[in-house]
Length: 338
Image 1 (cartoon, rainbow, N blue to C red):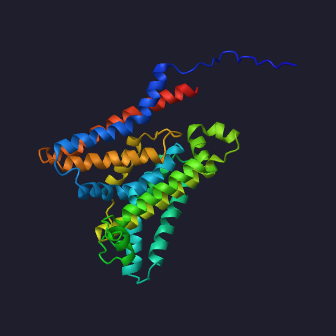
Image 2 (image 1 turned 60 degrees about the vertical axis):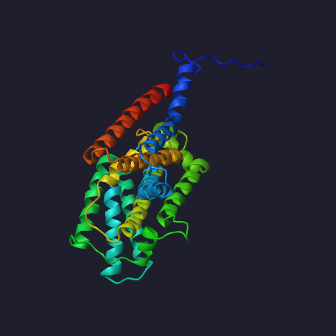
Image 3 (image 1 turned 120 degrees about the horizontal axis):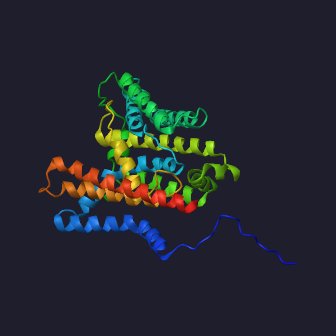
């Protein structure tokens, strides 16, 4: 007995054209070529750019962003956004420093309590987004105000200069005589764990499925609400880690929110090629985005001929271009799936 397959009326299946194949390859390799082009340009424009100490500086400069970008990648892959990460960095730093300096609670409890608080705020973000159906944009924006308000209230608006040796070690410590900073190792470890989770676990596959098409994921048996909550919890935890290493790097806990953290983290992840609409991207793309962002900012600082007031403008133009490309390719991918 032979089995015949009937074509579905109104739907045709076509192999991708040569142009589409090349576009997909170009999109995949764009971050690599961008990084190489920037590296070549800045190495020719500045004699100090390729010096080992400067390359190490780039890694240090992007380490805090790497922790933020790690969690943010999970959230963006599910098709959501977290606007509270910058405020969480401030909140966690203030909580840890306040517990240690003012309440005289010994380590490791201030660190663990601060990380737990950040994780809890991430859980609240997830519940508000999935159970109460508040758009993640609005839920996390409100959480940003809550976290920053708590930081100011706890610290009474004052900078806390007394921080623990644990925070100082993770923020400013070095690995032996190598010159590599501990915070760089922490960031690299977080990126590695996230890569393994997204690439080799069922949870990682569910994250991509949730972001690509929530309805289809539900039909396949995926609890998309739980996946979204988990992504926002992870983002809260990594923002907490970023807050702890940032306090150690600065040597103090400051109650003022550094808003550039939010823009820089989103910019780095998007520059790498992770889609704002979900379902496309990953940790490798985030790593490239971080290196591109770090190279761009560091390279501009190494060229004295560039007006300091123009550096933010140039960075903004590059970010805007990346966003436009991201949206265009995301739209093309969405049309290809329909």
